[in-house]
Image (cartoon, rainbow, N blue to C red; front, side, top):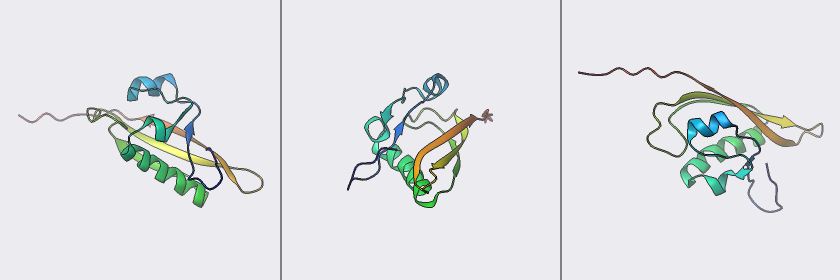
Length: 109
């Protein structure tokens, strides 16, 4: 999380990982999410992150499809994001884990 006085919160993915780069089709390590994602995707993710910071609670979601590309219906995953709280009570980092689930297709004839 990047804080600037009198500015909305910004979020940077510190470490994205090779597996996520291969699965989603883009690298995010070290990038601010608003600079690297479409507005729709940024608003979805930043909304979840803002909720965690404001409530001090984890956020869990199950998603199908990628972040940016319409042709990623083959991706299905669960994501658990958690806030890290300092002794002062301030949330200073978020961390998460993504677990991919195999997707089975039924072909209609």
